[in-house]
Length: 467
Image (cartoon, rainbow, N blue to C red; front, side, top):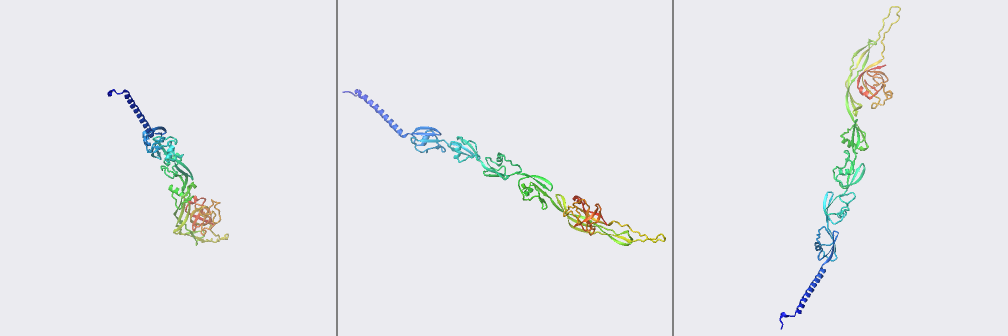
């Protein structure tokens, strides 16, 4: 009988081989099963990562796990074509764009945005910002968006400028009226009138009006004033120049006229004042026949004395010069006293001669004088062109054609019309006119000019009336 150690060697070798074959088969089976299981659980996926294509085989269950597997961090603003919770499928194509941060400064206010758009124009469209040709932007519309990019954008505002009944429309990104005017080379001078202040903020749809100033000449009572003004009324202009118009003053325009239609404004300053003038009342000479006096002899029985009267005149002055004088009141304050003269009427007879060669009686008589009477009178002066005068006298003398002719106006009851007279300080003249204020012992002397009349004034003169 054989012991165990002496067993059959062939049998032993067979058993070992069997074990090896079995182990390899098992390993192969396990590998096959594992491969089958892997193949059944994995998926081929393509990911476009910001334009870079990545193809991978993954066993990730969800898109989120896949992106983590690829070290791609998906944030809220990023653009992912699939939901992160979606299951991964074989052959899946996933589009992913990383969002870029862009700062936009709009009209001075800054905002940050995240975008996956490629160009500035696409980004602005995304934000609802429509860029017009008049707007101002710091970058080109076709530039690519870069992370951290800053875009300055000023939207143009529409401004209408009205000037001298013409208007023009502008678009601007300027902030103030002053910078807008400078940008468009619109000059506003100090006398021009702008509808708003230069530091006013520009707003869309704003309307500006510019009233251009022009030169106006004002003749104020002979004083020339040159001033710059816009087209306002005459009344407003005079108020601006602190020029007051009184009730009597005369303007060549109406106060509500527009200045642009009246480049020259004339103001005649009219003044009225009353003056009192004291005049002497000339006395008259009364002649009484006296038979006790020889003819040709006279004797003063009573001396004459002048009276006094006060005349009140309303004087009108135009720009400081007197143009008219009107008698508005006359009052006698002292009556005159006539001079009384005795005129002799006695004729002296010659004594008879006793001689034979004296056969007649001689009569002595005085020589007759050419002076009919002599008076003391109040005299003024006038011209042919005085207020209310026609230049034709009451007796038909044309003083317009004879400006130097010596003619006096008289009261016909004192000096008959047509009389030849002599006036102290004036000379020989004709009593050829009358006047409404020429009464009693008053005469008015014709002179050539108004200045002569004013300088003559009022005088007491001697007057001789000839036969």
